[in-house]
Length: 314
Image 1 (cartoon, one colour):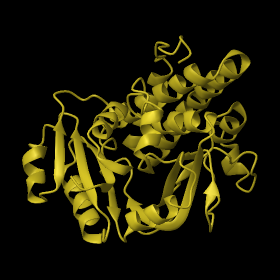
Image 2 (cartoon, helix red, strand yellow):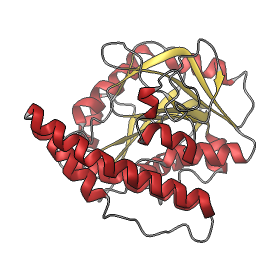
Image 3 (spheres, helix red, strand yellow):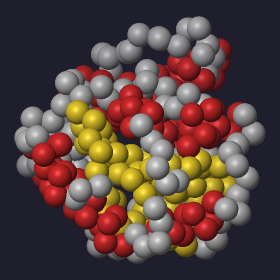
Image 4 (tube, helix red, strand yellow):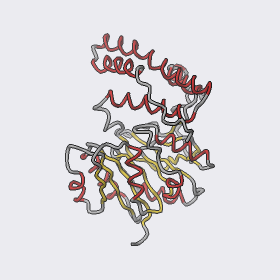
């Protein structure tokens, strides 16, 4: 087998239309780069994904019998990867240019243990949050207590969702999991995603572990993709909110201790608690059922505290 430059890993769950469009856009815009596409399907019920992907001819499908979660499914895909590099890609994305060629050229200039992210755009071409800082009690105060919205120019309070739009290559803490490009060996050296993160949080944890070992996470705005965002979970608002809450507490359990852990969990719970009346009143005033349901879901989250499966510190 000739050497493959990039293995593209896409996890899918009941989004065959988005998956088709994503794969078609990769094939359309990628030139002069050898690549393979590996789709890991988490037990979709809408159709036989393996059969649906046959139209493209170059897609390898892994069909799970149950929903193993985003982290585990990506790990499965990387196990089968033959490329020098891997591209972890959401199924709700579209290529609009030869992004892989840009990434390959950029990566050739980087240190070996580097993760690259690119600019994520909304469907209308507007900027989407593409980078994060690691969660800390301080930047959580800005985000959870709405202070970042009150003081939008404050770098101190806006660190969780970095609101800057860098013009050039920038070292960051986290690039969004919708698009992560790296050497295959880099991912494998970290033992991949921590599968204890079922849905959400896995990319933050991966970037954190990489940087602890001296690795680098960089954002490259010289190329972009469209990211629709939330396509799999928008129709399941309770699942989405529940998993986001669990993932953040899981992150605290794994990486924080002592006063930092106590502060982080407290701010998280207080932030959810103050949203209950805000969305409830807003829903009543606007006669908006979704806002009322969000209020209920925030209340439900206060009663869910995941078991600490990170007690061994690993």
